[in-house]
Amino acid sequence: MNLPITGGCLCGKVRYEILAEPLWTANCHCRTCQKAVGAPYFAALFVPASALKITGDYKEFASIAASGNTMFRGFCHECGTSLFGRNSRFTNIRPVSAVTLDDPTLYQPEKDIWVSEAQHWDVMNPELPKFAGNPWK
Image (tube, rainbow, N blue to C red; front, side, top):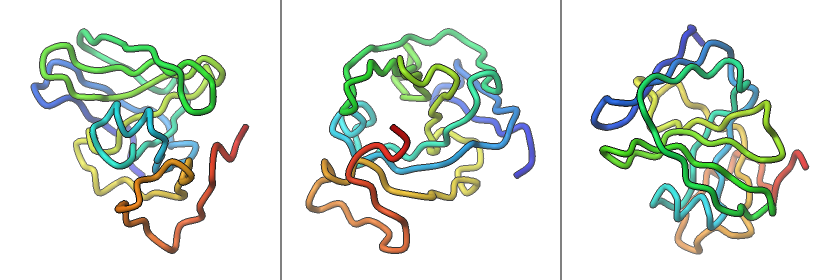
């Protein structure tokens, strides 16, 4: 993957650069992610926190995730795009929304997580490993 990886929100007021290779990728099917992104799952690149450079003003919404940890979800306060998050337990890792990448074809999911909370109509790639919850507790 060529670095930096860039992306941003719909209106362009919040932009980011990822300056390191993602640690892993996953489609999260937990209910809090579903509600936060308004979709059946959150397609995420998990990157080192130190490698995520954000420009522009954004807001965060805190909620308790399926894991019991507090998840802070960053979004553009102008257009509402959900961009990235941070977890109270895994402070050195930041999930970034794959659909907000300038080139979303760079995203290659490695696993499906929290499939125990997936919607019955959610069609998952049968080739990806499935985890009922969080595989890296």
